[in-house]
Length: 234
Ligand SMILES: O=C1O[C@H](COP(=O)(O)O)[C@@H](O)[C@H](O)[C@H]1O
Image (cartoon, rainbow, N blue to C red; front, side, top):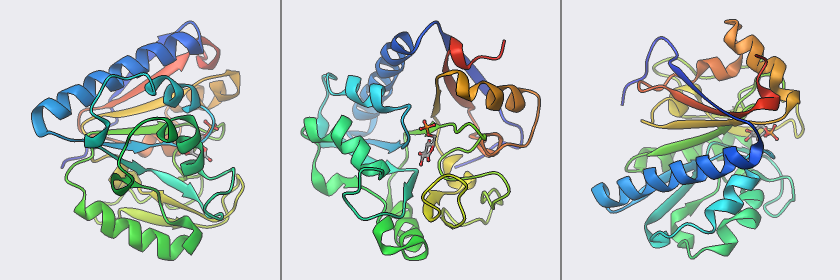
């Protein structure tokens, strides 16, 4: 898989979050359908945080062969397994507990083991993944994406590990696990969701060329950014 040196961005701007959710869920459905028709399975990386919740809820209604879906996470917080703030728990509650996915094909990051152990275990798992057809990402107010934070190592180098242990995160909890920028750039489709005026400054800085973590995600075929008007700095 290739990554690009420049970041190619496609902006998808919607008047409100409801419209964004409807269109993003339909696009995910189309990509899943294409992967299922071509390969017989679909491999999807999930984001945490609050923004994707409505999209995950909308995906419950998708008419698809759930038994052929394989789910991974782009980042996780080092907390006990059922803690409310875990990214995996959010996805189960909003979506995965409501559809017949196969437990053996759902791969939360084992962040309860601690950042280092979880990062090594998940890097091994990812090397065995057949493909990553689509990666979901969010954007924090400080420009972070997954758990790649400003002034931390984002793992952009061509020989960077696929998964990084993260410590001293400015957003709680301080210990986390994250796919590296290199790994997050190795998919033909990367969707980032950004809603609300709290994200406007991060978008402004990104478009102005500031080196925020989101700017390190450089899939060869570009990144699709789905925004509502509140997040758009104009
Ligand atoms: O902590 C995290 O934050 C980002 C952004 O979250 P949001 O609540 O502002 O949407 C998220 O993408 C990441 O997965 C999560 O661990």
